[in-house]
Image (cartoon, rainbow, N blue to C red; front, side, top):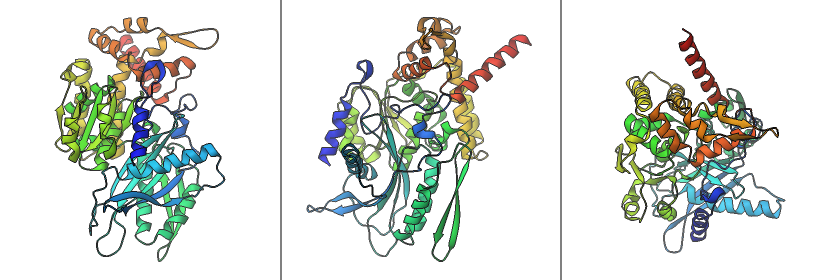
Length: 465
């Protein structure tokens, strides 16, 4: 455990482009190869590739000193004939997985009842490619006291809802026998990952039930398939969500606290998704393992989730200014103090109205509708503030573009919007977005471009009418 912790701590100190620090090898959602123009990263969203790389079972094993240590007790598939570099990468991955499947330390005791929970984590390789761990922690079927175990699916594909359904199927089969899981996962591995809005059907045989047909469907909007905004809205008021968004958009340090791993991972993924079409480009650990709690001392931006039982240890750390959010009580424990002043007041009120409208109709909307309504409110914010960016990229004969930052800021008529944008253009997330935009005249984020076009057409229509 100590060696793995040291590995992640070293990675926190690595320096990235332009002297900025890279996020740790544990997690960095931005360092992902880009896909075709108009699409999200192919690593996360392309159709046709494998659903997953591994399914592992992580169990607790008693050590000589009476404590419990998480160990991988099952792995599918077993990969053979790997090259040296591939073998080393696999070993690093398999060493790290148990740490994130049981991030809450080694103080466990056998129990007779345990409510299963679903959460996820992200591991980033040295080359920037990332893998997502989708986890279901449950109590094996049986009698008497026993220890929980974690079924973890490792995939390069970001689709929380879809993998949650896969884990439902895995858990159902686990209650029968481990042997029933293998043919299901084999069938899944042989099936191509569907395109947005499409469905893939898996045939699976279950003893005494016969052959089942399991349909797995991706959401139509690919940028919303790894998020559930409902979880965030259940824990926090709209006003607090805007304070958190304001801190995240200026790339500050954010610490989320909750009892349950599922609440931590879902809420942090939701906050990161509010930044679309931009991507959080710094340390990002939805559930921090106990041995990595000193991550909060990092001087650079981070977004991390920590279990509530570590609150005192976190507050005692010699950390710099940070926004600390208690997801259990729905309140902010520590703030910088200027969170209400970061966003332009008019746009802030518009977003607040949209979020309050959702809260007033909470029982009417499906999770998919909630995702769309919340996302549109925040996408509209970026359309209004920076949606004119493409008009200020000067294209050379070589085909590469140069962003004209001064003219871009000067073109903003609203003084309060301009004040915000002058700060936002200095962030790493905006720089990375513009670097992509300078490489090709074809926009990288099709959904964002569509919303920009709709807004510009509405403005033109109002002027002409």
